[in-house]
Length: 317
Image (cartoon, rainbow, N blue to C red):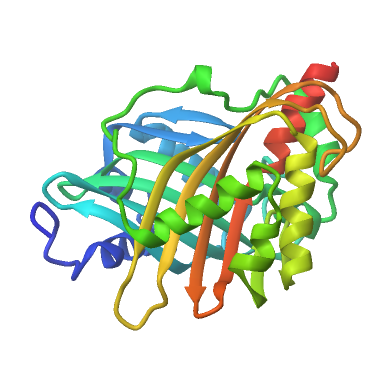
């Protein structure tokens, strides 16, 4: 781990450790300024943030709303070297109580559980580029709100979702690695986005465990088919792109893969987002998979459905 503190035994330990120091140990300002570059770029479906002070402010605002938030690192799938820099795809299961009023509305006291995935580029003990997807739909449903109605209120406030024209090029220009398991996941996703859903029965374990956007937990071929078909049906002609792809085989772990992907195009079909609006939509998604002897054993796919609704409802006025 050349260039990194000796506090960390390896890169996953660094990612898990600094997350705990910032959020749960409350080292918000000092630790973020230690571990994030002064000009860090954070891209989220709900917008783009630049500069370490904006990251400090956003973290403090989230903790004001969810003061007892715990961030449980389920996995870190990574690529790269300390010399060239490393990219981690960090899947987090958060538990929290909605104790404070904020972006999600008036405090409800509800206890919630939700996932997020953060792709972070780190070199010399510092993060300078990030792509973050949080399951806002899961949060809203658990505190008693409807994601579409919440999104409509945000549109009325002038909120706009992140789209590629807002993007800023950062220091990380990599695309991941050439590992076979990343390539396998890329092939599966590409097949489904070409409307070949037979890939589910041929490449998923019949007993697959699935965790999807909106806090959906499901099992089996039918659930995988329903999720991906409803997404593709909503955007039948949208361009699918694999933006980053990692495969990893590690000690005591199944082969894993992480793919950050995007859909760019029109909302022209009936599916997960209702009647066609013909809105131009950009979706940033991240998928993590664990493989077993019969194919995909576990899948975790997240995108921010509220960012999709914001784009649709902005178009509808």
